[in-house]
Length: 226
Image 1 (cartoon, rainbow, N blue to C red):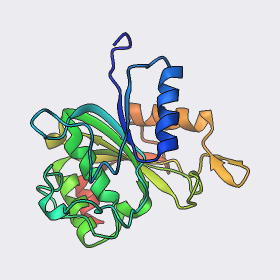
Image 2: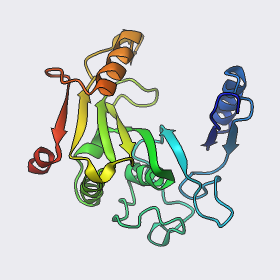
Image 3: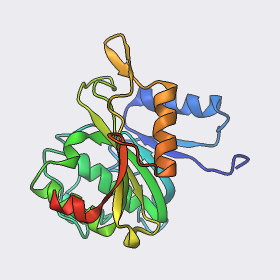
Image 4: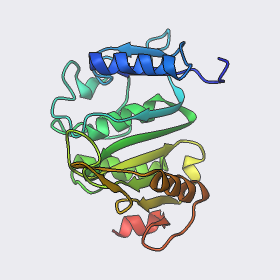
């Protein structure tokens, strides 16, 4: 395209899909393919001619937090798109890692992704702990950005952005962790990131700066100990 990018999106909610299409036109991306469908887990709409998942250079997502019915419409243990191959199946009543693994499988060999998930993905046990350990050992997680609580409509729980990067994943020896939970302004009954908060997050992350009590590179060896 004239912008050098091709945009694809899948959204379950009719109104949100319509808003996304409208937004793409207003931002001068009229060729963006925004499809309204069921869950990307049970019915992914962007596929290759051979039926495999289409893969992308970049993926961003804000899936439903801790979905209790993420497996409706398909059988995860025999997933035809092999999204859980090499991992254990996410717990039946918690879909956070199901969406994350869908994104991992949807990235090209040097693809990068960012997904907003509840903080629980960082410390919950059992199957999720096994998936988390496997993701870290594969080097897929480049960084974790902790966000303020009460930031999103519909929930007050704190969330984080998991930054995925397959490029040079096998040589990754640490995860850049950034705690942005203190930088916000009260806006009515919600919290909101200010421009200065966003700028600080982006600048510190991109430069890999070590800032006391805010950000540092945490070696995988230290993560294993904790």
